[in-house]
Image 1 (cartoon, rainbow, N blue to C red):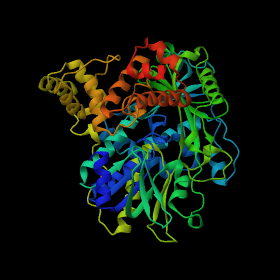
Image 2 (image 1 turned 30 degrees about the horizontal axis):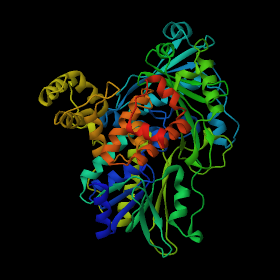
Image 3 (image 1 turned 90 degrees about the horizontal axis):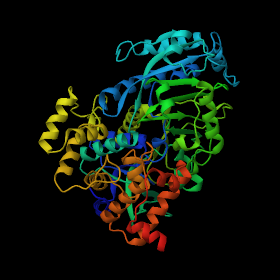
Image 4 (image 1 turned 180 degrees about the vertical axis):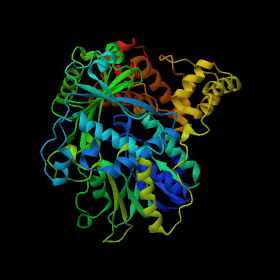
Length: 582
């Protein structure tokens, strides 16, 4: 359903079983779960889908090796199970990632687990070979029945430096194990959303909208796109806003009925670096290393560049987080420690991002010890209205099991049965995934009348959903864009089918153009012209959108107009001309 149809439907029938607020990966997960059970469920997201913490993850799909140190064995086991499910259910986006840990000590770190269990709060020491060996042995034990990936192995110093000669020569040894990575996390969120929307007639989702409590204790959905306000009557509300949970509760409860503080997130910042020497030095592995202060950092190949992170800093307002200069310096310093001979120039940092980990409220003095597990708590209404189920904590890897937990609690409240399980349910372009990709590509390319090279590009972006995209492209005249990998018809498909309302939806989340450092000023303006035509924007709206996007790109992601211009000479467009003349 289109936006206007959803709002009209609510005007005619405002009653819904569940209203989920928060369109991040956890909110979308519980929405999908409930829609699959046949409930009338409405999802409301204040910004765009997966535009907060769900777009700022480290791109890892992992068990959480370091959580073993905190004694979170149950979480690690659950995460490893969910990791392996994602490898099966979303093979178009989730793939194995060989991970190597440089080891600088032998005995260090053995007391960390004891310290944690005693409730002490000193910062952990460096983890030595024995502690890492113990953790990886537990990892192997927890996955022994599935055995989807090889067991860990240790290498001596000489063998390690032969494979990774750029590593800090002070290492004693290294350990290699396997986790996984996700190439298009925001796209996977959109596919989950679409899976829910097609599962149940009446299930609906709105980005750029808010659920607010009125003075008389009722609720309204306020649309930020056209300013409409529509009454809604949910039997249950699920607050899945992550780091925004306490802020969202302020608009869901009267002041005297608000619950105590539930959330205490920390910020993690990352850099995307375009440096061929750095990329080659990784030998297609992730390097999972400790900085000199004991903080865990990562770097691994990502979309032809290298992703490096991250920090762990307490924040109060998730709305304003960005990678600050001192964080950028810290990440580069950590990189210089583990790969001392590789120099990174400022212009090689092509993108940066930061997000808030949705952690439960904690007074722990060391952020690394705040529990990473998830749970739900129900806030009962004291002044009328529906109960509010709050989803607390959670990590990206466990979105499915967290959504399942919240959905089961909602179903119990509403006295509805669970009809469908999602444990083995493929996601989006992971459906009907071919055993022989080359044969599938050749068949679809021939059937749709497009080149094999183009079909392979589409498959890399959409999995088996590429067939529908290819069909749309082939059904009308197509036009090239400044980025050779994209065309007008492909972006028209995304705009029309994936709830694109702003330029950043398209360039930051529906595609990887910005995060991969491939966005030029030419491409930005061409896409803006296309979006303006689809949305029928006036020249003033078009100019405003251009300014909005450049401000966001500079303020949040460290990419300014000069950087975009350097990637490709700007061309004159209607929007650009309007912006300059206005």
